[in-house]
Structures are given as structure tokens and as C-alpha cells.
Image (tube, rainbow, N blue to C red):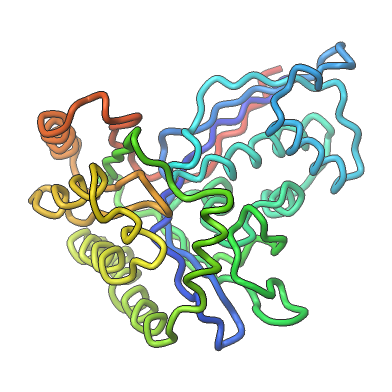
Length: 329
């Protein structure tokens, strides 16, 4: 039997509550996109030593899966057909881990859920956007984690080292099919990860309760209604405001250089309704509503900046159903 999984990627617009006075932290807003995505095949092999040829990241996911589900994986092989660049703000590690987890579950004949697999492979400990994007797609708001001694999480930390389970999804909506995001990923800078990411949480948390209150109001009474009412202008304005006025974990890392220059350019373009940085970047997103506008934006970027400055320049529509899982034979 062979299983193939095609994942979405995700944009993360920001964490909401990094204060914790109400007994919860985190909470995130983001969106699942059709591309780029991981496409991975897995199948049962007669080679009992197949793990020898696997990458350390793949072995790590398999080990966590086996420990959680009490399985033994020695006879499964994998092939990566497409990938999401890592550490650029597109949620690559979560999508990879969930794709491998789904393949393992199918081949081991385990009936389970995406959330349970996320628990097994230890993803979703800070933001639930990537897990929800893989599961069902759409624009997503998650409710964060209980916070304090003996709670789901006792300190501010990134998903890479958090043991908290994926948070509840409290809003998921498919916007109009013409809404799309131009993605611009530069080569010269990477998003925070590893020790730098941990230090960012340590150095910046907790943030002021008044900042959380302002951001929560922006999301509740402007961004979410705009999605439901299909008002791309208000939605884009809300995203831009979120990205420019609440920058503890985003754009204040890029005060000069190509990312800074690209953001300034997106704010001046009349075809872009909203723009900002996904997670720690460096991927920039620019919201628009037609293929023609997307092509025009991409051409302007290519005319303004050298092509060799980018790892990724493309337009992607919202993924509306989550990962595609196919049993080939």
C-alpha cells in the first residue's frame, strides 16, 4: 500500500495574548494556502533497515509517532516530491510532521485524528494555525492554551519546545475564492528559530495587557466580520494594522534591508489590500483579489528587485479543505 499526502502551507498573522492575566496565552490568526506545500509518498518496503537512509528530521517524527502509538516502524520508506522552505514563516515543520504522521497512521492501520497526530509528533504547542490548516484549511482563529502552574503551559515558549496540545479552533471560514496572497520570500534573511526564537519569547513576554486588549478588539470587531461579510478592503486594513501596530514578534526584526524595503513597497501598491510578515518572516504576504492584479504585483517586484534575491515569488489562493490524502494502491 502507498499513501500520498499533499499539504497546504500557512501564513501566521500573529499571536494574540502573550500576557496571560486571564489564564490563557497565545491564540493565533492565520490562513491555509494552496502552495507551496509538502508532497510526500510513503509505502511499506521489504527492506527492514530502511530507516538507515532516512533524514534525522524524518527519524525524529517516526520516533515520536512510535512512542505515542506504541508502534514499531522499520519497514516504511518515504519520498519527498515537493517541499515548503524551512524557517521562512510558512509553517514547514508542522506540515511535514503531520504529513509523515498521517502516512504512518494509514500504513499502520490506525484510526485517529489530525489533532491526535499533532499530539504525537509534538506540533501545535504554541499556535494551532498549522494543525488546523492541515486538517481543514481556511482562515483560522485558535483559542490558545490555559496558562499557569499545572496548566497546559506554564511559561512563554515557541512551538518547537512546547509540550502543550493543539489549541481549540474557535473560528474557521473559507473566504471568497478570488482572494489570494502574493508570497515574497527573500534569500538573505531567515525567520527566528532555535535559540533566537526562544530568546524572543523570553525577552518580550509578557507584553502589556492593554496591547492584547487593543489587538483582540481589532480582530473581533474588524477582521473577523470582514471575512464573513466578504469585505476584502476591511480585512486587508485589519491585517495591515495588526502587522504595523503589534510588532513584538514580527516586523521589528526587519528595520532595514530587503524585507523592510519590500514591506514599504507593498504599502504603496493600490492593488494590495493588506500586507505584512508571516510569523517571524522573512516571507511577506500581500493580499489581492484577482489573478491579473497578482501578476501585476509580481512583475512590479521583479522589476524593482534582483531576481536572485528571492527563494520564492508566487501567488496562492486559500486552501479550503486541508491536506489531500490519497491511497494509491
